[in-house]
Image (cartoon, rainbow, N blue to C red; front, side, top):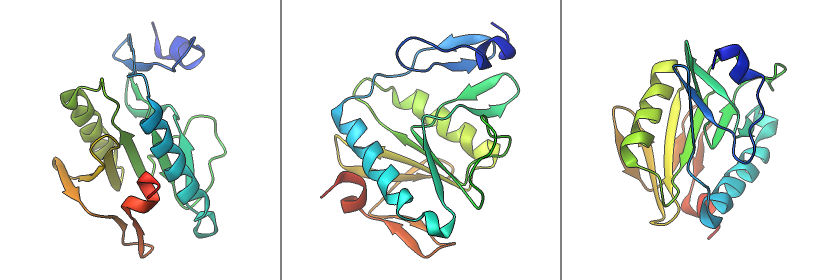
Length: 160
């Protein structure tokens, strides 16, 4: 499949990622995954006055012939006008599902960094753990956005 065909294709069920001409299935989100995705979207929705704009499951071009779909991406300072962003998001977030392979998720996180994403995060709703990803996942107790003096706490992410 060509990039143009991929970008104009709607898939049954979950949207699919595109990697070098191949369509790849994504992990099926479970209840905890969906809850965390919702909590984070609400958190960033509450920060829209600071020009932080959250988008769940948006196709993101990370390089030529490679489109990934972060669970949530946050753009700053402008709300997107185009259907597919040409610029990298400010934050890319992956939320683990039970059937995710850590090696696959880590590869995605590295691609976001290589694309120029300032903050790359991974959350594990089953273990209730949060990670920043800069040269590999590092477990943290809060996810910080120092440019705004903001912190995403476990209560924000997991609904405590």
